[in-house]
Length: 194
Image 1: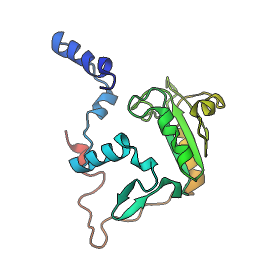
Image 2: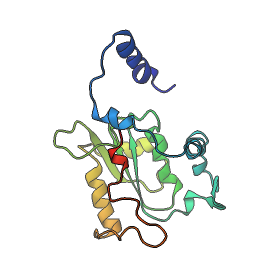
Image 3: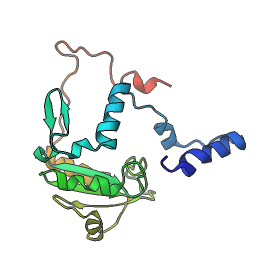
C-alpha cells in the first residue's frame, strides 16, 4: 500500500475514532472525482502502463493492430514529474527523456502526485520547480544537479514552450458537424454533477 499512514490511517483515526469532520480542501475535493473512464480501460491502463511498463518496451502495446514504440515519437515533448510523487516517482518519469527521439523539455515540480501538477501560477505559491531540456538524458539526479530551483509554478514555462511549438492560438472549429452532433452546449453537463 502506498503511504498508508498519511493516505489511509489518518482518515480512519480522525474521522472514525475521533469523530472529526474533515477540513474542506479543494484539492481533495478534486481528487475524490472518479476517473470517468470505463472499468476495462482503467484496468488496461493500470496494467499495461503502470504495472508492466509496456509503453517503455519496443512494440510493447498494440492498439487497434498498431504497435506502439515511443522511440518513433518525433514530436517535441514536455514531460513533468513531482519530487514527492508516491505513485509515479520522478526518476521514473524522467526516464521518458531517454526513450523518445524527440526534443524533451522536463519540468520537476516540488510537492507530490496532485499538487505537483495542479500548481497554478500564484504569487503566494509555496511550490518551486526545476526545468530544462533533457533529450537523451539517462541520469535524473545529474540533470537535477545541473538545473536551478525556481520559485513558483512550472506552468509559465509550459505556456511559453507551447507557444513556441504550436504557434499562435486560434478559434476552435465549430462543434456538431457531420455525423457527430453536439450533445449540449459547453461546458457540458459533467461540471454540474454532484
